[in-house]
Length: 624
Image 1: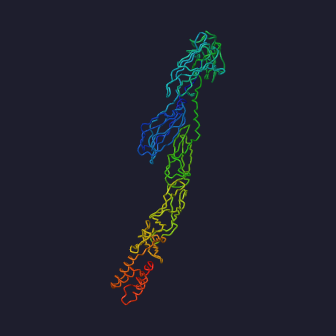
Image 2: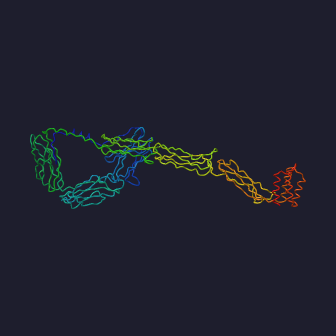
Image 3: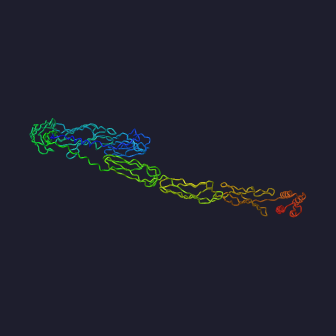
């Protein structure tokens, strides 16, 4: 039993204490530029129940969502892009609980936050209303009972792990799992204290933070009840009375202990069954009195308040404000996507900041910064301020190159006036990039294959991964000469009366024929002919090689007679001349025929030209 003799109340101190306590506010709500997301829910990930998945309905116009997460005394603010409506809190373990909310954000600034939603622990919360005690006449039976936890976790309870521990040396006497909510422990030493620990559990385990601890104290008297302390008028004597305990073992004696600040200045022993005593306490002081009931195992104590009207008024205690928080918050920067190539981004990228404070909470956290301008090592800085005014910042360098590289092409070769290349040209490329620099420039390309409007292509790539298709088109290439052949010949030997009409065919399927091949025919003294086609040229300037064909002409008397009469008729010669020459041929008079033919061009009225005479003589001699 404790007695304090007070001169006045501490109302002012109580008021000051209340003003400095309470739940600290979280990150302040932002402006109302955009409405708060609706339908915020938290669920456990299907593949890993220790991860918490947040989801919400999209808000038109949101470029980012600001996520506020509170776990224990730590608040974290982070951002996700506006094209997503989910966020997964990393693996948290079975005993972690989060309060989460989400707000919108766009170029006009932060929008409103949704209400908080709580993701509770996977494992159960702690037991409620644990009551330890002793039973039996000698107190050798310990008892404990408790109520079920208010939260069974994300799975049904599987039981309670209960441990009985001897308090003096921490020896575990019992460790078992039970489904009951009470237990009796026989054969306990009445003179010892025992610790009972109870932890509810489910398939996800149990949490050390919610472990229920209860003491089964020594078997000693219960606390005295109804204690009253009364100072005698204008006297140093104080009468103290009380009621004996109604439970527990019998009381051997009571001890009245007293002091000014603590009950350590002195004591008075009162033997049971007496329930009163007298203390000699000088006036003008606030005294503390304790009344304890003793047996061999120890004592209990009941509180008692005594007012001393003669004591001076005690001023209200001075409440010293808590020292300001000096630990700065933390801030980390992350990119919404990895660099595309060589540390460069070739498209828009945003820097998102995550702010954490484990004391006063996050006050402000820099909004995401989206980079669209080209440039190397652009510095983006974010700042976090906690509610105590501590500031921290971080910077990240981002290189952006969204511009494709450029190129110039040069053709190695010369086309003729008609625009054709006779030899395959090569195309070389010169590349440039004013941002990240050129990574790949096409090697020289040889234009293989004949044809009109040929092209040479390649790809220019800069170090950021931007590409440009490099191409040179409209190249006319013809490296092959035209195809030439001798036409009109199908046999190796022809009669004189059926002389073939040789000719030249010239063709070019690429650039086309510029000049056709020209025919020349030569023969020897045995009537062996060679027909030659030469000079065929295409538009690209390719000239075909000369092509020849051989054949033989066989004369006969009828064929020579027919040729003789045809020449004479062409020159309007007399009929008699033709009859004479034909008679000579019919009678085998070849030399007379030759002599007559050779003289004919010399007459005034010549029936044959010199060339005709030479031709007839050529064939007559072959017959002779």
